[in-house]
Image (cartoon, rainbow, N blue to C red):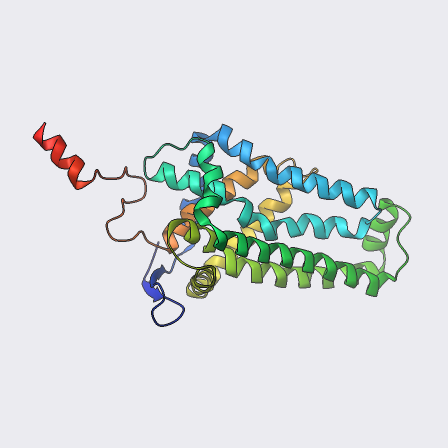
Amino acid sequence: MAKRSVAAGTQAGAVRVAVRTIGVADLKDALAKGIEDFKAMPSHAVFLGVIYPVIGVVLLRAALGLDLWPLLFPLAAGLGLVGPFFAIGLYELSRRREQGLDAAPWHAFRALRMCGANCLALGAMLAVVFLAWLATAQGITVLVFGDAAPASLGAFLREVFTTQAGWTLLAVGTGVGVLFAAAIFSISVVSFPLLLDRKVSAVEAVAISIRAVRASPVTMAVWGAANTAALVIGSLPVFIGLVVVMPVLGHASWHLYRKVIPPLEGESAPGRRSRPSNKRALRTRAA
């Protein structure tokens, strides 16, 4: 459960946002609510979730077509780096359902317009990091195996799992990948939902996201590891499982955001319908 709240901001005069500490019980509750959202909006969620696997399959086909065998795993692992951007529509559906509003699928496509340039800027940054990860992975492979491309996928896998050089590649590549993932997780775990929910800049959202991770480092590490494991499992075979995994994690991430960043005073509590305005309430009483 949430233990305490701290004020989070970037500079003097910047938006002040309360950041709660959370525990593992909060993660379980967020995941349970994410599953509830998926069950309540399966057609919407699967429709949106298909986008992510399709991108994965396209990248996979490109790697196979160009004989870039060493980039297959980095491509699959790196998709998680840009996942928060593709989940914006899912955050919006969960937000609307939380407030008792209509959660028709077209509302998901309005989410990016609601975020505006800030979401696009942050999404572009994630894309740059994704490309940097691929370039780094390729560089590590060349350093370990040299410039010669393996003759086939089978030959590459044999080198990776049966040779000293392959084990070195796995160890170094995994270590560097964890660093990339940790950096992206820290700046994006609550930043996209925050941009959707509040009027803050991309810089402020990133700073608050980092503060949220620092406030609950162990819990956030568990959440990041669970997300990574789910995405890896969902990627087998050929990203098909992501049709379910991606929507569930997207919805759950919104509810995690709600546990970390409490609603503003006057907003309806999560899970309750918004209260009518004063004018509407007066009209109701008059009637």
